[in-house]
Length: 324
Image 1: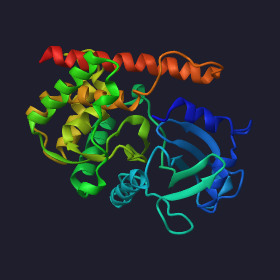
Image 2: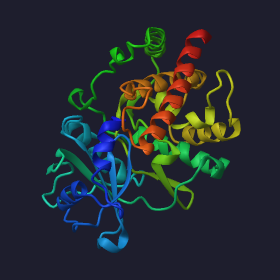
Image 3: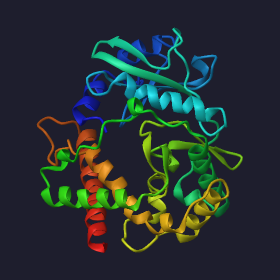
Image 4: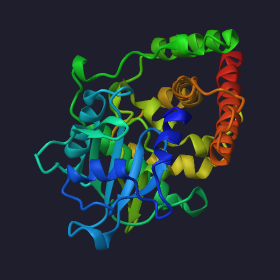
């Protein structure tokens, strides 16, 4: 998650038509005309969309982040994975820049930005309420194909180790996080290249099949943790209870139709869900609970939403240690 101050910094450059000179500088590296890119959202990266009438290639998504916060490698490894997975139809392919690179470092009015671009994934976004058992089964099969087909990551490709020092302001949580991660390590479940965030809001659906467009959280880890990250809305936040058991069962059935999934792995789903929560908590550990002076209303609202989200994640991690 980008710091709220960084989101505000780019937001201040966005005009009433959702255009920004920062996005224009990034877009130029892909041969996109000034004024075509429009702000879409800012979360892990800043995302601007180029509408279909502005570029002959169709709808494009430009994603960029300050060079001070991320390295080229941080964007390059996920882009290479997207290209690999796209050959099987599971993801959209990254779009090379005019210079032929998957990642560009662009000088902007707000400093250097590392940037990538992808074409729009075909289809529409589905909400949880739209999900049926056949669609959940297709979703599980799609994640299994990613696990089956992903090339292994080298040691140089791995993201930095998770730094639990980020949680030091909450010693109880920090201790619980260590317990959860140690338990997942001891479980010694099958491992490989993970997508990292194969949730419904990171894919589009066409003819009953999903296509993913984001692999920023890719790393090596236990496959069951990737499943836990994908289905956390199906499992829900109540320890020992699954909120959508039929949909979860369909997802797992679809997964097992492509690659093996042991019952010992499934029995550890909520434990690995707590490990996912630890990672999310580290990602937003920089967030302050209280608004800062002169903070815009959208930032106040986003901060409040993230604080509530953090409380739910914290409860999930603590509950996992009680259950052990």
